[in-house]
Amino acid sequence: MSTPRPTWAFSLSAALLLMAPFDVLASLAMDLYLPVVPAMPGLLNTTPFLIQLTLSLYMGMLGVGQVIFGPMSDRLGRRPVLLVGGSVFVVASLGAACSSTATAFVAFRLLQAMGASAALVATFATVRDVYGRRPEGVVIYGLFSSILAFVPALGPLVGALIGACCGWRAIFVVLAVLAVPALVNAGVQWPETRPVVAAKTRRFVLPIVTSVAFWVYTLGFSAGMGTFFVFFSTAPRVLIGQAGFSEVGFSVAFAGVAVVMIVTTRFAKAFVARWGIAGCVARGMVLLVCGAVFLALGELFGSPSVLTFILPMGGMAVGIVVTVSVTANGALARFDDTAGSAVALYFCFQSLIVSLAGTGAVALLNGDTAWPIIGYAVTMAGLVLAGLALLRVRPGERPA
Image 1 (cartoon, helix red, strand yellow):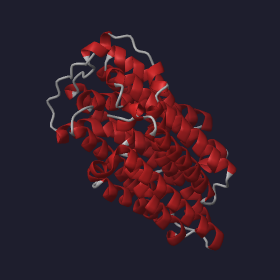
Image 2 (spheres, one colour):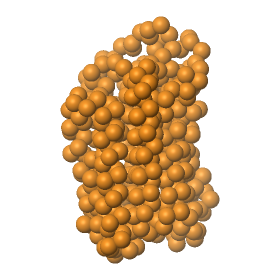
Image 3 (cartoon, one colour):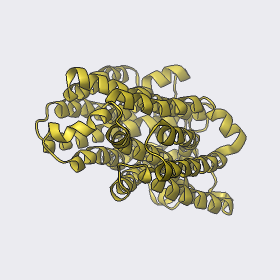
């Protein structure tokens, strides 16, 4: 049964201004905090491992929470889930800023991730509701990818400046302050977009979790963003701890990789038109492997520097953008009438893969080096390329 499309009166630029802040804030909660991570064990009298958990658990909870909020958005609507999630994000950010113990800080970070996950699933379900089969769909996913590249370009630098001037607590106050106007704007303007038929239809997740295409493209997103996650988990230790970069110098070097992502995003629509979804993902995986080879050469024959660490990551950044700008369309193409549940499972599984496999790579392969990035990228790219080969012999699973 075809599902009636909701009325959406916004232009593409107006829609982006309405929806993008929630996507940005979920990322900012990671990136603003990143430059102060090396100092946090001393500030909260805890261990580096526990502080690493505030990154890993945030990423994991960002996905796990969506298993709750995705189906909830299919039943109750996108708008209430978005507004409640945004409100929780504000409260949790202020709670993290006021924390005096590591236990309280971790708890508020988890709550912050829950709020962010609710807002994210409502946002992406709205995108699927409105733009699922319109040409603007590829454009808006590309724009979101561009924003997510822009945030890491400026986030660590801004976080370093805020931390140096006002202390680490101010970072979380800033997150709360930025969320309030986005929440008020959504409360006034965001319409309900849940399709009428979807609201009355009982949802089953079995067709989603048994879809080969869903898993291949979810793994594709996990390969791309997981490589970036391992990069920003290890980059402070490699560049600040090993190469002797200052916090500001680290942020500038980190921003260079994100700038490459921004530039690449401008060509995402042309890439899709020329290579298709599967072709973009395959080329993205090849770029990840090539970058990993150059990182390995730097580890074996050099020392951490812009040439041996940042430059190979720049090449991998191109592969990340080429991949993640198309994987949502590939994974969700067959699930329009259960968009909330499908989006929730997509983000849940990729967040779990990224957080568990990414953290495992950092823990097992020496997080003071590039080996975690190398191991994660090569392993995940191999799995995705094998999955794409399987899809070629199962044409019924390919996205429309």
